[in-house]
Length: 141
Image (cartoon, rainbow, N blue to C red; front, side, top):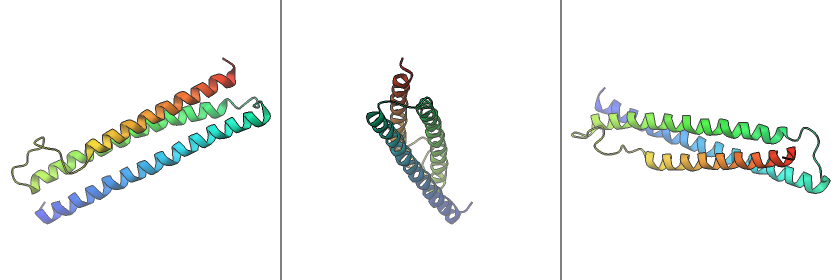
């Protein structure tokens, strides 16, 4: 691979990582909004009618399951971005004389991405626990 081709590949990888992370943040924003809207709807329904129908427990069960899947997706996206960070680092090695693989970080802000994904994972766990509390209330435990 010549230098121009390596530079193009490096640019493509950066755009790809940025695109994946942007989509991930968009997904989380939408997903969090849906969770909180559903919680608000359930709270409003209770205050209006004072009761729920017999299958209302399915809503928190569904959201707990979705939050667990969201946590897994967060891990998979993080692993994917981390793998691409290593690819970027190896390409940078070819382009920058004297740069070693673990000499210094790549130009991908992987530390920032990792910290954000940890916070999103924590948020998903907290939301799932709150849904667990809603489920406990609905089942009268």
